[in-house]
Image (cartoon, rainbow, N blue to C red; front, side):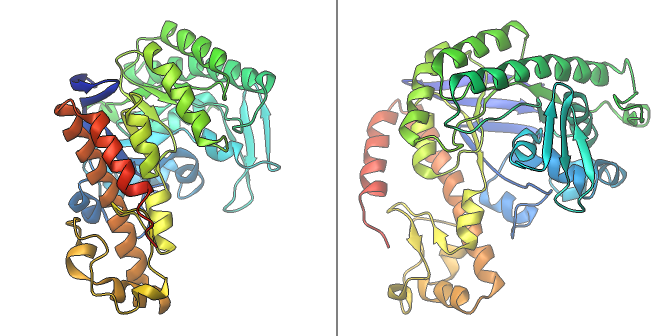
Length: 394
């Protein structure tokens, strides 16, 4: 379990197979984001039909509503949300650190005000690990300290050092839960031990590399993370948080030769051009709310670039959104009908464009895997960019 094999390469780009308790995942892979245990506007069957093999859910949001105890009572996260394929849970670090003005940070963790009911909550490395254990995702992320993309070196180092200290605590707590050495929670409450009634919860913990846009910090952080191993995967956090895209690309390019052969997860990245650039630089896993958020706002990904379905030129357009796409949206409806749904504020429009965008990114990942297997990723990426970035779509 938790094995990763690299099946083909084309330059730094890799095709791999990640074995997880709830199934195998081919990489590169895009993970739709089911923040609150649901990918907005899409059912689990929609996701399966779209070809999703790995979905992300968020620890912070599920902790504040409905609470991990409710999720556990209803069968843990897979059963709770009706998803029988692999799940990854983010630790909540990004969410609590985005609550600027309503949180307090110290070495123990973060105290924050719930956006749901205003109550004061605390997330420590141990609590974030325990919540993810109860949720039961295949992959749990370590609790990290995120800083904005433009953070200076001193601020970035402070966050990196804290992230590394917290990583040691996450690793220790996860080992205790996995080995069954304790069922006590860090705050004194009980963590239920489901292994007494069912097979052990099988879950792996992945570290998150921080360091802002400072390459020396990233390299140092990577070395220290690997010294704390072994690990079954590695996440790169703190990019795509406000820094210019060329800076993100340069950071990935310089890091790639130093990264181990583990699955590499670039957190929070999901625009098509960014996926292609990151795969070109050796990244394997991605997540982002962009496909569903853009879809709900009437923006669709297509091979010829983004399309704004609200534009008047689509009023009587009989063409499908994307003639090359096999999703329900593109094989059933015209652009004219999709525009009508948005102009009439019909909920179906939100679902159909969200479904298409998720399918587009999953198909894009599949096309990249095919190009890597042919050892032709460079020429494929050149042609893809020529069409996507220079087509002048509306």
